[in-house]
Image (cartoon, rainbow, N blue to C red; front, side):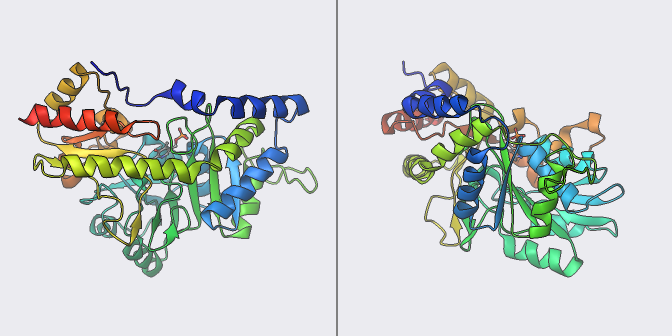
Length: 368
Ligand SMILES: *Cc1c(COP(=O)(O)O)cnc(C)c1O
């Protein structure tokens, strides 16, 4: 029997081991640990890659969200609209600046639903946080129009969508600030925690530089506000900068895998698959995850596991409206239905064609 883990951490290291070891040797030998040239280089390259004016390396994706909201002036008493189908970090960041996360439904594409967002607006709403989940960007023109007409700030949780685009505009560039996570299983993963913020707004960028470094202004060393230790480690920046060179290649492989899934599973009407690569010229998806919906999901999952195939339910099988301990108890029609069926199949650049075909065959065997 084949063994296909959901994600293969050791294999990702082995793939380019010598490059990583040489990079570590170089950085450690220079004693370059905090905010050194490797961080600056990575930030420059990330800004170029995303077509944004500024990129700032930060501690992780959650800090990226929290500090972005803070830099945008979101504060106590404000409401921020966020889809319930997201990582708790999105809502936690809103909570930790003192604002209230207002949960909304998702659409057919598992991304923020326009009408649900529109209906959630009150006179306290200050911002919308669209979450560009699974490597796909939401249909942002209607969301941008809404934000514009209601005078709302957009802070994007684009932690899962580096390099994805909608109508030729990249994830993270639609609002005041966009965020990325370099958690090891992310499309650009490092060997630990890491994150970044991109923005085109110089004032926000300058504020963020201060916030991520204890509120200190680097020009005179004076503390201007209460900040955080929210920096990206220089050693991670160096590794990420090397990994960024292979990013497009890795994304192409993810898109090939998505195509194999599509070609082999498309005629099963018990499944709902993510849109195929190139199926819609408005979207370029990077397939952070391959999240399907499946009838009989739990039995399918067990069958796949019995056949050596690892799968995952995103967020452990919960969406944020499930977390009663945080004060949520909302019913969200599409989200709740989606959650009863959602399932992530293995998706990473080192899967072989044979492995993906085996997964497809096993799924077909289950439904026959
Ligand atoms: C990964 C992720 C984050 C941030 O996670 P960190 O582990 O803090 O880097 C935020 N939102 C979403 C949707 C994510 O997938």
